[in-house]
Image 1 (cartoon, rainbow over the protein chains, first blue to last red):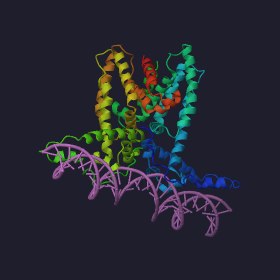
Image 2 (cartoon, rainbow over the protein chains, first blue to last red):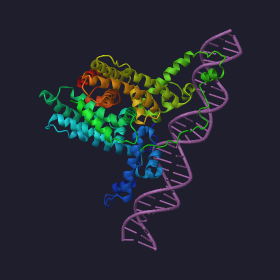
Image 3 (cartoon, each protein chain N blue to C red):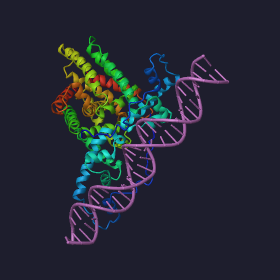
Image 4 (cartoon, chains in turn green, blue, orange, yellow):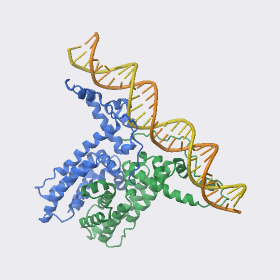
Length: 232
Length: 232
DNA sequence: CTAACATTTTTCCAACTGGTCAAAATTCTT
DNA sequence: AAGAATTTTGACCAGTTGGAAAAATGTTAG
């Protein structure tokens, strides 16, 4: 399939506006930047929160500002007062997301004992899937759509990080401290498995016959131990 | 965040129409059902094919009939002549999908040697991810959205099948023929890992620094061997 | 060849979409 | 309390969306 051009870019005169406060600060450097209002702080918290619900469920195109506004408990124009474009809410969510996602891998210690190090990496990933399933789904949605908005970050930051850690793993394998495998595919497996519990939650629950009320906890514990042991 | 009601049901007088041919066949049982035209056969092949492109990329809500029609090389009303509702194209794709997806697990032989049996199951799954990535992504999209259209099938057919195979696996473990693990999580791991190569294709390619031209083959071979070996 | 049917195009529609704008309502500062 | 600034609302727009209806065009069995 490839391109499928979206007839987007609806407003030719886009990018002209800016958030009022920001605009003021930008055009009048003399004046003190006037700190964020209480309301501003609140709303800029509530809106991405609501948007996460909707974007993670329907993807960028499938989500509507109206929906987000409704979840956030405000009117569409009011929401647009804080985030003048749909894309900006999404961008904000995505960029936060990437930082959080890279952290666990980044913190994997090269000097530690490789086996517990990997085990704890898996655990952290699983915990993230349990505690932030919406973020996981947002990411998955973005991937499914070909990652249009984050491909460069993946190609540079993520690739470099993985290259680095893969090199460390290879070194450990050379020392015979862990079983030899392709380090990249090892990492992919970890990503895949942990993501799965968030992204395919419905399926997991349905197959295990879990009540929808029984959130995470015990299932997660089994998943963690099960997955750690299968690494052996 | 669960409900997010879409303000759908736009046409209150829906469900009134039917495909002309089908309608005729239904209301005039005397007449011979009048076999499908050449054109009908062609189009009913082309349309789901095009729809698969679009749905797998944008999900149900994000996809538009216009897009599908464009990919299929026909006008929207013409497309609607064959599939009067957007949902019907999607439904058709999804139901085909489920059959195909269950097949490999269903064919896993309870009497065979468990290890090669699992290995070949993984291989089949990986091959499916390589050869039918759009189908995989369509499924993933559906899952991310909470599987609204297939939850019952998952809860019944899939659950039963997995329960059955899990029982077999447990028996093998009792015999000490394979390492003891939670059979459900073993199966989830296989699903997760294989899906990953289709759904997160972009990420896999970016991290491995693969050219976008180099499709599947060699990467897949490594993935297969790598994943099989890590089962050991 | 032609009637009967199948297909396609054209035109149209109401609801929804992302987004604008000015006025009204609220909140903050002094 | 008053004035200034911020926040919210309501009305509105142009473009898109899923879909309907009918007219125009093709196809094909007899």
